[in-house]
Length: 316
Image (cartoon, rainbow, N blue to C red; front, top):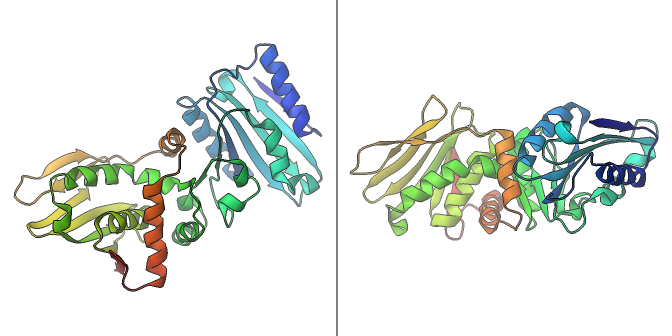
């Protein structure tokens, strides 16, 4: 069911949700969080599709917010419940003119009480998510640097303004790589790793994040190599016994793991959908210290040639 409200207020929208719940049109019991999605009209459909899919695992009240200060003053709302909302409720707010100025005041009345709030920016994030008025409402703030205007610059900007509770979907995209590499490192003494490299598309934030993770975890020099590919192509570790390499195969779902002295292994390394990455981030609402340390390495790379405990060096 979809209900539209024009010339409305946030309190009227909340009252409508309460009425629908009382009439049996929406059930808030079991909702685990509020997911706020500041976005554009162009990104709205894709963002809602991903959020709706993620809500099947994490029943949520999804509040999408589209603001346009150049539009006429006023607030319009669209409420979706039942089949149209997945496992929760969806509220789409369209704020124009003066109504678009204080976006946090539109969102705050609609947040579920006694449940965590997550904010996800599907495209260009604000300069500092934790200091953004809407971002300040949340315990967890999710950006997507890959979908921004300048992915490489955005992830480095997010590194400079990092606040515990921040994360980026490119970190979730790198999870399969980090999991496979962590398994490989169980078979290799960390102190034997002399250097590492990450090869992939130079504008992909996953390349920088995996490089930062290796630098912070291994305390060795990490090189990034720019290749023509859609994402990370290969990660390698130089050890005293030879190179450990993990390289994605052209099928996009598997990779070849090479360990010195052992036969090559084929391992699963699938590309992940937007909804899968979002669902992963909604599973973990506490600050991610490992992500924070990876970002610290990116910040150090911008200002130092030699890093304490490791370095990042770019080559092409």
